[in-house]
Amino acid sequence: MAASIAGSLGVTHDIIGELTFQFAKLIRRQRENKPIYREHIENAIDRSRSRQMRRRFNQAARMNNGISLAQLLCGKLPHGKLDPVAWADAKRNVFSLPLLAELIVAGYLEDEPVLFKAAGKRDIEGYADPPVCVIGSTGSRFAMEHLNRRGQNVHCSLAQTVLHFHEAMEIARRKDEDGCIGPCDGYVVMSGRFDGFGIVPHRSSTVLGWASAYKDRSETGSLKIGIAQKQAESLIMRLAPGPRFESKLQAAMSKKAAK
View 1: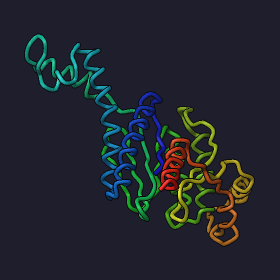
View 2 (view 1 turned 90 degrees about the horizontal axis):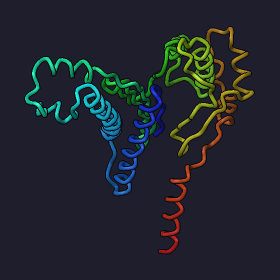
View 3 (view 1 turned 135 degrees about the horizontal axis):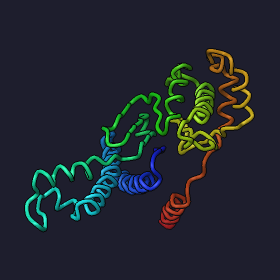
View 4 (view 1 turned 180 degrees about the vertical axis):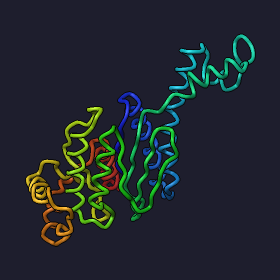
């Protein structure tokens, strides 16, 4: 699985931290030969968001009303019962707080590609056949408009997809009214044909060449031919496993060798 997140830095940092913890529990479940379903991924995302939201509600209740969230929900206040005026004030100061984070989680469950989008406090949008999703500041709208104009879909070749996303990224940065979109290093690639992740550099000479050649062309169907596909596959740089994964893998291999 891979995740992309946008929003307030403090909020997104905590959500990703909790999501990592929830996924670690799923890894343990997998090692126990227990199946993992789409609902497990959705639950991990929801728990990560709700934990952050509960913390914000609790802090707002203490700062604005001088009570904890638990006291507010139970109506057991130090000075008596929660009256309608106090409840209305709490709803305005506490429960109306937004969750300034949008999240996309994508990957594979066995051989099934999955994609989930969680925006703010809204319900999770989940797809078995990943469509196109965007998150973030105002530039994301322009990115989606361009991807729709290019006709990006699951049947596009890797070369087409890389070009379309390169163009969308440049347009989003240029037209972003909030100025929140920074430089892009590359695009994460996941495939059912190999384990782990790969990355295609954003400013690779091949990608820049495609961008120049197709700048004024309305369609990119010619990038489906074999040569372009081989070029796109050659651009993928495999990402090495992180140190936590490597240490666990080495420990497992040592244990196996000892047996």
